[in-house]
Length: 161
Length: 217
Image 1: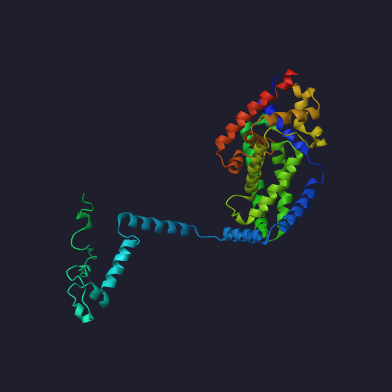
Image 2: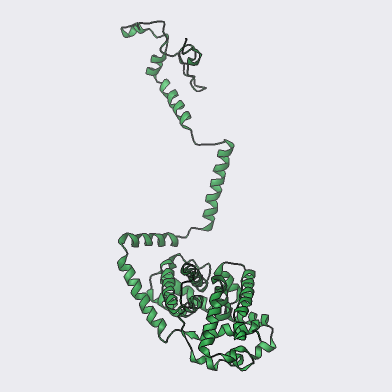
C-alpha cells in the first residue's frame, strides 16, 4: 500500500522529534559569544571603522520624498539638456568668449590693428605689404571670425611637379 | 487525528495560519523592542533574540542539511550575519521573517557548494515520539511504517528529503515540519504564494515516490 499525501505529511512532522542534545542551544550561545570576541580581536581598526561607517550610513534615514525630489530634478535637467534649452558651456564657447574678452583689452586691439603706424614704436616691419597680423575687429554681437592671411591655406597648391 | 476527520485540509491550514499569526503578533511586538535595544548596543537583547529563534533556525537548517555539524556551523554564521547587519534592519518585515530569510539563503548557498559530498549526521529522536498521537496513528494502521523501527524510519525519511532539490526541501521543511503558513514562506523566500503551493505539491509527489520503497521491501 502506497503512502498517501496526508501520510507523507504526517511522517514529515515526525522529523520535529529529531532534536539536538539537551543544553545544546545554551552551549552554542557561549560559542557564539566566543566567536564574536575573537572576530573583534582579529579585525583591524580600519575594518571596524568601515563597519561603523556602513552602519551609520544604513541608519541614516532619508525621507522617501527626498528620493522623489532628487529624481524630479534629474529629469528636469535631462529634459532641458535634451531640448537644448540649457547645457553646460563647452570648451569652444569658453575659449571664444575669453578671446573676445582679450580682444576688448586696449593692448590686444593695438596689436591686431592693420592700420597701426609702426613708426610710433620706432621701427617699421621689413616687409610692409605682408599682412602677418590679421585684421580682426572685435564685434560685440558675434563670435570673432578667424581669417588666415588673405585666402584660405587649403586654396594653395602644396606641391607642383 | 479527530480534527482531520472533521475538517478538510484547507480549513486546518487556515486555522494553523490564524494561530501562527496570533503567535507572531506577540512575537513581533517583543522583537521590535529587542531589535531596537540591539541596535543601541545592548548585546543582552540579542541574546534574547538568540534564545527565541535559535531552535527554529537550527531546525530549519538541520532539516535542509541533514547534518548536525553543518547545521551547528550555519546556525552560528546566520546569527553572526544577523548581528553584523542588524543596524541595517529597518523593520519592513518582521525580525522573524528577516532572520529566516538569512538562514534559508545561507543554507541554500551552502548546500549548493557542498554538492553531493556529504554524510548524514542525524540528531537523536526525542523519546517523546513514542507518545505522539500522529506516530501512534501511523504505526497502528496498516501502513508499511508499522514494519520499520524508529531509526530506520528516521534514516529513510532523511534519505527521501535529501533527494529533493534544496529549494523544495526548504519549502517542505518550513511547511510540513515547522508548520509555517504559505504566506510566511512566500515572504521568506521572496516568491509568490502560488509558487510555494506548487513546490509543495511537487515535493509531496516526489516524497511519495521516494518513500514507496517502504512498500517494495
